Image (cartoon, rainbow, N blue to C red):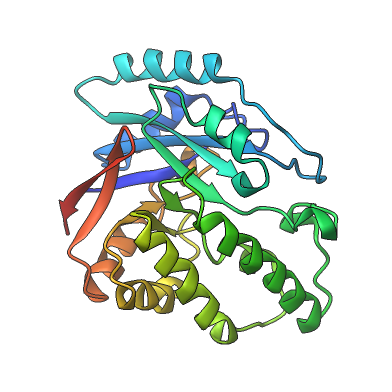
Length: 263
């Protein structure tokens, strides 16, 4: 079983203080073969203000230094979690043109600008109606993002649910999710199983089944760890779920090309 964690954050993300070397050591301690650091670049910040650039030099420098330090112990790839890329395709193209970049997670973290653009973390969810209104907005944005060329894998498709204490169901969104995943497949892109640091694994089963129905085969697994203690959490359980859903491979990436590892 090839264990990799393809969604992690270091101190270069605004919501993490973790040095990359500590994240890499945690990956080694967890028995991972490969780690991809995917620090945040959101084209809307948490308050909905547009962003149009990303400072690559610190990311490249820390990746090179830590890769050399862990040579022979861990394969370390340079990635990016690019949020709301569909809002500024020119900026997204410029940001993702870095030659050293291996992997891009395409994510939706914010309400659309017309609804204020704030991160779903800050959206109030007092009742089911508020939850479904947020999900309507979320999947509308993801449907647009899926058709863009500025990502390799769609990130945490069930993302807003982690902030909703009110019980909601995604069953009413299955047709929309299927269409999103079909678009990703048609463009040669994949999806991730995001374990939310080991908290969400079983929840991915219906989404994976929809993806399989669309002919999808490219799946990465990520913990969404922002601290060393979260690295690798839920990865093995996610691999078992993939096998149980009929998938034969888990993917890693090299310069935007999927690498298939047998489950």
